[in-house]
Length: 360
Ligand code: ATP
Image 1 (cartoon, helix red, strand yellow):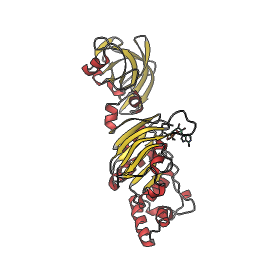
Image 2: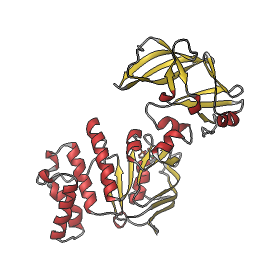
Image 3: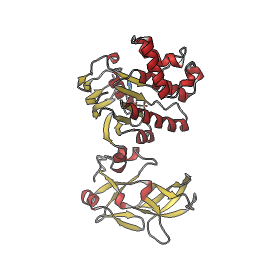
Image 4: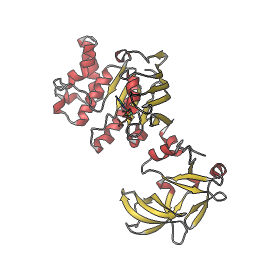
């Protein structure tokens, strides 16, 4: 087991106009489950591949524990990687696939069998030992790939979108299994995904990347409650936060028929200039009869049983605001209705319109 440190790690591809990974700094604790998340093309895979030694580092350093591995070949880094495609050998059985890394590194047969048995028990693969990958479901293949990583007892696990070939239900099940397995094994894990729900539910901490740059790193709830900038605010959380431009007037926010005070911390930092403000769906609610608020035209109703979401638009200070409101499962709103929406402005997020950085 070991900590992993990135120091100013940069990768630039030939002919590219910007760095694929740009001065990336991150310390991952020993035994930590760190999720690297961001939109397509943000540099997640390149970061992971540099850590694995599969991609050169143009600038900066990567350390495992105290050891600088920046120029150490992949095979000498003591890491095990689980890919999206699993990379299983089709002609080998489950047992042979799992034992393969041990065979190539010359582990004696008896010891190999014991380790394979241990992994097989852990992953509940006993019944499938003699099948080949072609005779397995996607979820089972994924578990075999995990088994092959586990038997190596590496210092670090690297996982690149390992659940993306699974259907939605299996993905939910498997992400819990991986998180609890990691917890039991206590092996430092770096997990790449573009799926913010996966990041929120699996990681001890999440590192958000955009355009090759680290945007924020923190516990899932920290990122949700206090996103460092507008990008993180809109990327983390589902449905996405409603964000709009406005001008505070003496610390009051214009909400259609209502003027609502914002927290002092926001008012003092935003002042009288233009500011970007954001609220999550649960910070809006439907007004009771006669209360003032935003007049929202409902475009879409999403029912989830216990609760649901209304997607709509509301006129506000000469612009049309697209917003999402969480409602109780027993609401009566329908597409085409106009409802009055209140906002809990104590939960307001505020961002600098020029830099996108959080103000409060
Ligand atoms: P995705 O979620 O789509 O896999 P990602 O966040 O993993 O994306 P990377 O694969 O790390 O992104 O790519 C980062 C950037 O580097 C992208 O702009 C990509 O086009 C570019 N890139 C990646 N690999 C190469 C390569 N071998 N040569 C040139 N450019 C590359």
